[in-house]
Length: 119
Image (tube, rainbow, N blue to C red; front, side, top):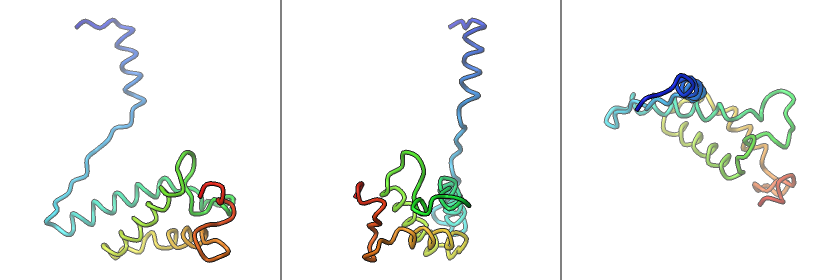
């Protein structure tokens, strides 16, 4: 197959906009390897969480931005609780605690008034 110069330019520009993914190295028989892979995943999850930034709307604390649903944030926080339980790494405990407590409603459930419409 022969590519024209304009086709090659388009392919290069398209490739430049793609994010390069890299597989995690994991040895399931090695505790240190499992902790390292888990740490990488936890760090990546926290990149999605921007609702605890200074000036954020208080009702947004504990939620994920954009098109993410409440249950996806719940899965993330549950995963980070599990991450701590399995690794004993307390790095994300303050953010996790803040997020979970921010979403407790007035009846001490996870149904805050700001989100009644989506529950």
